[in-house]
Image (tube, rainbow, N blue to C red):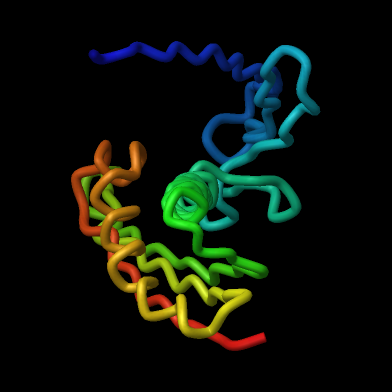
Length: 153
């Protein structure tokens, strides 16, 4: 039985100064009812505000979060206790001629600590399952690789 999940997000912008490409403000708000406003902008390479989230960072974060949450769910179902999880994820986007571009890959580097180090042997299988079932990774058209590291408490 399949289920459908719907998501509503409002992106709100104002700021055209009439000064053309160099002058308009890229800052905007990402709004979801009942949640804190996310302050967004363009990547600084595209004249955005460095202190604000940009769509490229959010895409990498989304892939990292989805993998983590799927992995933790699989671990919990398998009785594998994870005590710590940190992912230093990175993404590569290539600009193409004609104001276009695309991500060419994202690499997830989760560092996972297990309560029982012997259970860490299952980590590779669980990471592969998480990769195969992550909703976001299944929705992109570029490779999402993972290079997990297991640590002991």
